[in-house]
Length: 239
Image (cartoon, rainbow, N blue to C red; front, side, top):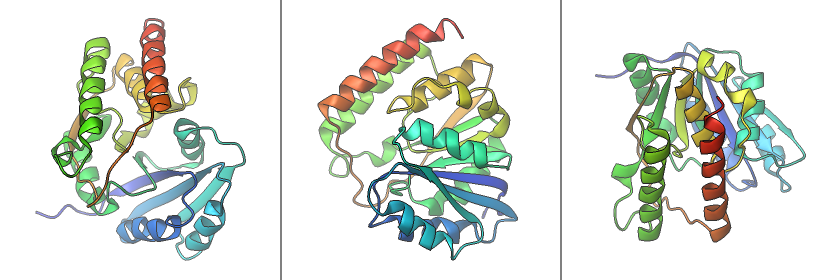
């Protein structure tokens, strides 16, 4: 059965160096929420040096529910989401990556499932979409390794901490998001560990990858994620 339009939802879209696509992507998200009883879309330009901010502001001018904010120094995804959250006003907070590898058209069902479950966090699980031929084999293997390490270290009830589509209760973020020390690739992991340490409830549900979506990962990124994961583990004993 169709889900009723969600209400009281703020959608945060961190963006960096996405000049060619950001306007069209904002239009897609705005089209999804245009009939929701109350919603806001906040696009956070994370210090882009191309014309991302300009193109985003042009697109936002056509949608009264879309706001574009930003700053000049690249802070990382975590820093962008901290900034976006500080400008939000509604009670349900969605994080979605601005490249829309996870299509926004699934947001009504995703947020509906969040409301049905009554948890503090619902994370998207894309493993059913990471099939051979749709996602690089090496990338799938690395993802499985990251999942195994995180389950061993943190015992989180969700497997896929890094998927770029999540929804939160505002109260879960108010006491965790502003204090994060990790703002790069492992940002999501620290946030979820902190929420769990404070007694937050969480679950995951399948989400769909856009056709043709893929993901590469560099050695420097692997190093950063591994280093930050260990740092989060050590810090978690003090939370």
